[in-house]
Length: 307
Image (cartoon, rainbow, N blue to C red; front, side, top):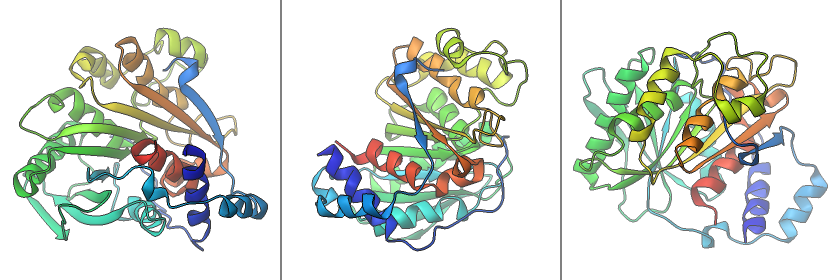
């Protein structure tokens, strides 16, 4: 069933002629080896697509859910950050864009779109009116959005997907408010290109194995905060951490060092939390292209909705 799901997803994506691209690069504000795999960023061949087509079935029969997924942009991010991914998921029959929710600095909410209570795999885009603010305020704004969704639409459960600082702010939300019973439960959380250990120097020579086993040699203030608060992370929230490596010697996605992205795995796994990471490699693993990469689309869809 899983193989069929992935084949079908790739076929649907290959039918899209052009992918949305966000030209503006986003800036920021460890794991056990078995938890990580590397995925080459390249487009499947025509023959691979033909094989997939011959074996495909309706992926919606594998796992249907009415739990909405919120997509949260990073520093200086805009509607364009996730527009492409949301469109590709819709075209593939893997979700339906329901709402765009904009939160102002004072926490007030406005929305566009139409919410249907029984819609399958509803997708909600979250926009910060002040898209250059810090992760503490953004965590509060995520709280405001979730509170609004619960009060307005009686939504009790959500998934979160955050790119770059959107992933950092989502994690800060989870260790600050994730166990608040007055807010919707977060079932699954995906971080894409998130600098969990900020941009500190001094970890460049540490092996990824050592990072997995011991945590980063040099920690940022951000990572120190997360280390102190990790026991507040909701135990039921599963996490997928997607990082990029251009494989050009930079050991990162061109913006976020791979060791900064993977550092959070050490905290998650040493505290017995459900964590998995994936590494995207190649030219399309650039920070501002991760959310335009169909390999990332596939990972997102499989983690959220696959069996």
